[in-house]
Length: 259
Image 1 (cartoon, rainbow, N blue to C red):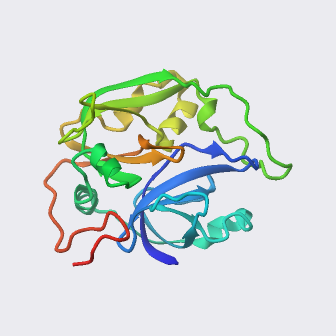
Image 2: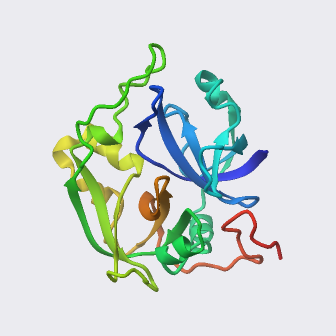
């Protein structure tokens, strides 16, 4: 299938595959398919949040989540994977960004989970931002064959002794605890930690938390092995303002009816 309208909403911190490749999970939205997860992708692929891309995708037989796809030929053509992606546009306008994500929100992560969707957007009330020890820090992982680890210099999740976390309530929060507490995997956070280890706490300011002129949305996704457990793929920040409803409802999943 050719997707020519995939809006990139976030990229998670890199992680190693068993064969030694280092990969990034990418999430976005397509008018054709609704929310989309692309995995694996290369860390050195030059696409950014809000880019609109054209890419040929196919089902990932190892991932049964409705939103999960992979770039066609991603394993056999790993070295030239970037050639399969064409940037065809960009959502530049702050108003367009706000209207897009604002019209894709759900009242609670629990609603996303109950509908058996693995991706979604919520507008949170932030209760706390903090760091917690990373339980996977320093653990060894199986190296791949020589020649498949050319990106070993890219830091992966388990290279960090801590993990950033957000505690928040959804607008109609249905969590048993009355709030959600989730790890942030946005790659930009971890890039900051590498470049500015002495200013770790500034990452929250960088993400524009607590600013009256900014609306914060969280692009969340569940975990492959724990389908009811969600993480924050990306912190989406847009200038504060009203959300204008679209002429036609936006799809959140492929089988949503077309008006």
